[in-house]
Length: 337
Ligand SMILES: [Cu+2]
Image (cartoon, rainbow, N blue to C red; front, top):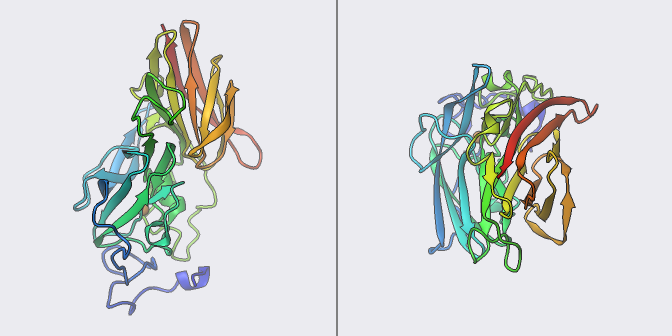
């Protein structure tokens, strides 16, 4: 078992000299990684993911911040990549393999949040082992249509904050344009992955906080607020795939992911949205709302069918989890013509 005391012990002498080399520091990862013993030979879909730890986000005030994430394709460590990481999109009923390749530098995993496969494919570090200097295959079934996300689960508090997540969409057999079999159709879709970023955390090493030192991962002080990897101060107001222009009578699907740690309060700026799916499960009855409040990792599938032309500002307030204080705001826009 791991506890704070034995995390402080350097890994020297464990597992044939892996400890201390290759930048692994004192992180206690699994030396005895094995192939997934339960893989089927004929998956319906295969995703390949590598990792990068040298990306950046350009912020509206001219600053930038280091971002880590997953790359499309495996292989060695990529030179930067998209933020969020490339989405995975599959069809209900499919068996999926996700191949994660991690070089010697470090350890990472992929956890398909809300999918809940067996422990060999769970991707939580120390349950399914941390992947390092190898390729590991996760296997999962796309059972319920809706919006999910995948993220790294090694030193999770830091790695998820650093940007190691991407959207995961399960379409019904009818394909994109239908939310679920027997459910509503939609004409356009956007993804709103709302997240807060703490500049200080983005200077830390991938093992930070795992070696007995207190690096402050219990103290999140976000200074930037993003929607789907775009600064929510200004840029997200017009960002493709985040902002949208729809005609009266069209239906817009917003796939909302609470990708931060603090609570979030969304206001739809005068529009009424209908929530059809929550956390990958169809609601017994759709719910009409003018906004919502969500907590870390929650997802909502919301359909807007605006009736009046105009600019509607979608506002996400990030709330301190104890005091409720508004720490920051991210905004995007739905333009109705
Ligand atoms: Cu990671």
